[in-house]
Image (cartoon, rainbow, N blue to C red):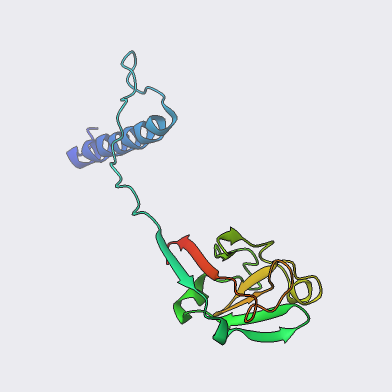
Length: 155
């Protein structure tokens, strides 16, 4: 009994699809599926490089700094910065850097208790606010220092 021609075509197509899938997997692993012929050296899919990350820099206005308690202060940041702030699910997501007279402060991503009780430059970017302390626990509205926040990211 002879099989219908569409059965032969279906079998051929199934074998072809399997061979293409195997070749794609082997290409990624650098394995040859073609007997003695080596696997191709060039990528089949060309990707474009990602655009460079956007950066932002903002000088902090001392008149907008608000005292919290102990050594802690806060200042409101632009609302669109909130999407990249730390939160309960992402406690170290923020890439914000706080500087005092061009010297980086830190540690960052710290709790409010550490900022209030210890200070010494600790800070945290939480929602649209930056909670921070100065390097020597002085009042940032009166110490004649310049505070700048900057960050790079894919906002």
